[in-house]
Image 1 (tube, rainbow, N blue to C red):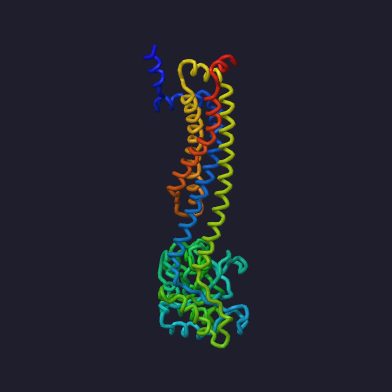
Image 2 (tube, helix red, strand yellow):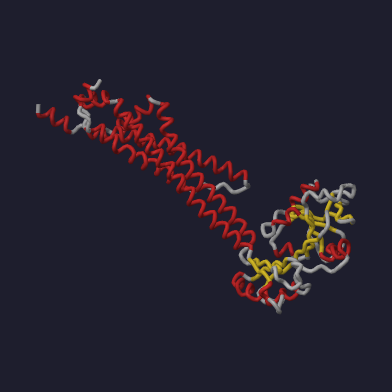
Length: 403
């Protein structure tokens, strides 16, 4: 008799047995299992999706900042500028180029005219395409690239030649640069010599037709053009120093009326704002996950009540309170873990779908995947503590009698 008692006292529930009995309730009540995991899945999907979209957006911003470089400065006339027209002095580009750490400088000016595919199209149909006059150094200063063709040189910048932004080319039906291809700007035909790729530093150039400064003066306006915006590329360690003297260099009399900005600063501010929204949405995802955990706890309490006979029978056959507690705790963890797995997959899919629609690189941080699964398991364990304890304390005689 003592030997039997000793054997019973050493009764153990192996890992495989725990998983088998713990998953029994999930396998036999599939509809309830699916609905119970939904809350956890939504919470985890929200958190993974927010982290994934934030990382993808941040990577897109970082790629733009890398394309811009942090050593690019933009100079414009302020609201109180003496000329009152938003134009800078015609000598500004030459003066800025004399600043020692400046490695490249170029200007860009809006030209008030229209661009059309042919002269038979009404002047009112412009497809939202603007016209800019640019100097030869703009391409190098902005670190821009051409899709096709060539940029202006000393000769073509004086001729009726045009480079189209990538969006403007699509609007005008220009696929590539071919001999004799022309567009009608103002009342003059201009030969298309190039198509400009997307320019991160100057978004407006995508929807623009760009002509040389000398050509704009000769064939469109008939007068001298003053710079509207000046782009300045400096040595990396001299950005602040150059920024401090640009106002006085461009307009010595009233330097405070000259606006100097760094395009990468705006992107950095956008990244900071995105981080703030990420924290907010993570909080909402955590609330959804908490609600899912409460739902699992509620389902497990109901499961204990429904399965009193099973609990009593197992206790009568030798299962200890620890075995019962482990069974229902495992069931809660498996329930939440299944929801976590579905949530991670759903969040990753949403990240991929939205990032691709925005032409972003798809980035799903490993911490989002691992953290989502761990969070689900932890929520399941917490949610299952009370129901498992309640099941373990249920006397076997009372459980069997309740049937």
